Image (tube, rainbow, N blue to C red):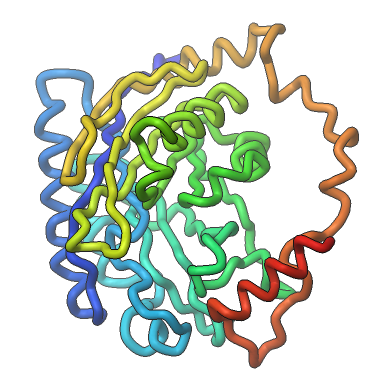
Length: 330
């Protein structure tokens, strides 16, 4: 068996937020430049084969209503941005986890999704739509909440550099998301995030590092985590400290960006052969095989959302608050 070892690059960005679709192009321009830098910087060392970007690197939900997001910013996928990323992936023979963008889909006309794509030379390998939206603020939809939604919630891409899955930001505070990705076959968990202060990558509430390390060791997976690093002027009302990082399958931090906002690229080795050997031979701390799944009745009942939206309903901040209060009582 060939030894599978390469470098991954976790990249964080500091962009002004687009307020119309055409403005997304300048963000994609810079994303392509950052990929060039990540690949070039590794030329004398272990080659970069996986490059990841943070949540909202392409576009953030800067409008408070679904109607405005539909009209001004949301895009169908594939699009010109994913096409350009595919061309770059083909140029270098790499895989790119896109920053997220706001997606519209004709199959779900009243919804906007927060979506990231894994892209290789052959195109989009999967499209992941954020399942646990950051309620009450976020008014884009969770695919879980749409009655009759039939697409895979937690897709995995099986590639020559390992099996890759992703989840977006708030998803990572729900261990079940990453456990499902691991049980679906993931060996690398990509985190596409926009973690803001005070729940960021700095003490005393370094949730970012805590959660990344826990999800890695719980699932015997590498974690490649790109975090938003926008300055306050670019993404008010919050400030952002980045801290993009890579963690190995035993929870060791292999690399972490220095604190503070701004563009940064951090690179670390991914050894899929070592991970597979550990999964095959280990008896102790093999958490995926030690699961007593039927012991947890909490997962056998429905909590959130307390009701599915009707076809003509759209999400709102006020409506999200009402759903949260109802879910608390359950």
